[in-house]
Amino acid sequence: MSNRLPTPPSREKRLPAIAVLSAGSGALAGGSQRSGVAACAVDLERLGLGASAPADVRLLPAGSFRSWDGRTMPNDLDGWVLTAEDGARLVAAAAARQSDRVIDYEHATLHAKAGGGKAPAAGWFRELEWRRDGLWALGVKWTAQAAAHIAAREYRYLSPVFSFDETTGRVLNLLHASLTNDPGLDGLTDLAASLAAELFALPPSHQEQSMPEYLKKLLKALGLSETASEPEALAAIAALKSNVASLSAQINTAPDPAKYVPVATLSALQTEHASVQGQLAALTAEIAGGKVAALVADGLAAGKLTPAIKDWAEGLGKKDPEALTAFLSAAPVVCKPGETQSKGQKPDGTGVAALSADAKKVCQLLGVAEADYQSTLAAA
Image (cartoon, rainbow, N blue to C red; front, side):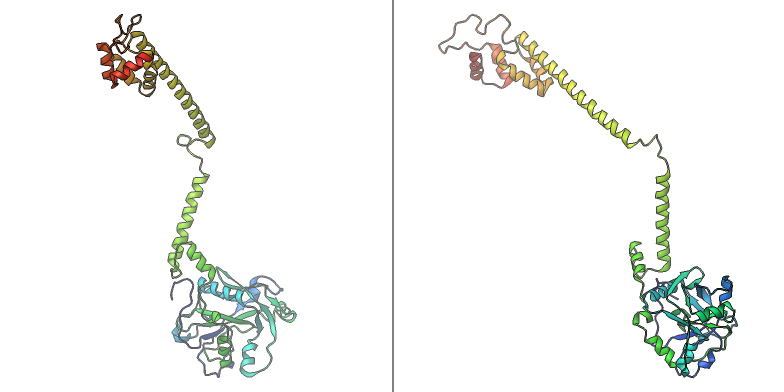
């Protein structure tokens, strides 16, 4: 049996076997079609509801099962098989069905198809549910007469009729059910062709059930293909549950105060840090500005700077205080306080005093043309 989810086993184009889970089915023999007839029953009284007719009844057990008297199965099968996947498929088929399924008396529906006659209903059901112990019919609507028969213990057993694969024994489709008092097994016989015709008259979706859409969506959500096997799907679900449990444990565990701080505390620290950084930058700028001003003042006082290049010296100091310090250390005295640039010499014919040797050295250090420097001094 394949463990693919939950596509029923592929079958040749032939009539499926039919299981009638009550005794006396041999009376329906005579058809030429291949099918199987088996029997067991559900004891309504054991549902523990006393004299009332139960609304929910189990139709088929989960797993592998067979008739209690041990009669031979078709092709020497060990028994019928109803898996959770088969149950999901039958539930989906019931949900897609528009009409109710009948519960008759003593399989009268089969007798009527085989030889005519009436087949009065004992009850109706539509909704199916898969549970751990098998397939259940929910909300059975009993007729007043059937309810009275059950309450009086005149009928005690419920016998389902279903088709199955003669190769694997897997349940394929649930047809209807019957009230019966004889849960024995008369043997495996052929059913009337009309019953098989009824089965194959069902829509194709009821014959070859494809995977339900909800299972396709579930496999896709798990990151699996539609051909994933049951073990692969279960492993993916187990991994997902493990991840969820791990995340839940992390969420429910208080953080280590040695490693983590509240968001509010961190935000306050970041704000405080930004404020301190701003204050530090302002203080640094102030200190640097004071140092530059002091260097320029000392340069002017020492005669190494003149008022004409004061702005240049301040700009250099703001950009690179170390460069200004180096310049002042190497620069000669251009004009000592109290002395004139010409040192009492009269101007030459140009009207501009000649540069001293120290002044020429300053021009060389600054990379300034002597003529330009003379013009600056004249303007000052």
